[in-house]
Length: 184
Image (cartoon, rainbow, N blue to C red; front, side, top):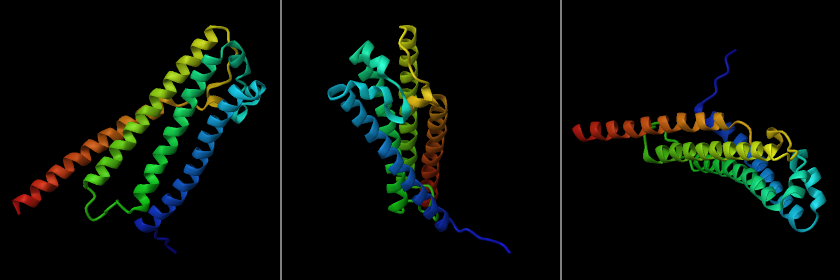
């Protein structure tokens, strides 16, 4: 017995998975933002059990500005991830993936935008990591990078560069496709 999965079915599964990931990323971004505001304005003790168990109470006691900068990096990374999946959902939902003509401007713009977002996530993860390392050098007790949500900077940058190369290949494919249509 052979099971055949069509491209349309696979894209539907990817759309559902993208929605699930998107919802989780929105919850993460909202949790980070609300925990930051709550710890800074209402209850500084909330930094003890920050989002996902990260203990940022030492950082908040050391300096509120440094706390704000570190949480800024965390929030920006979470928001960029959520925006990336928002763009993926919009592309899959609007059915802009034309398999009959895969080289089109909409798909090239989509891949380019996703590559720029991945690069931005990589840079903010890297900056957040460097900032956390600097804070550790200042003798501030910091949680592990994975608890801060800033791990994988090199992976995000690798993905961004790879997608940028693919976007350029698609762009060239559009140019060749246009030239072939004009010569016929």
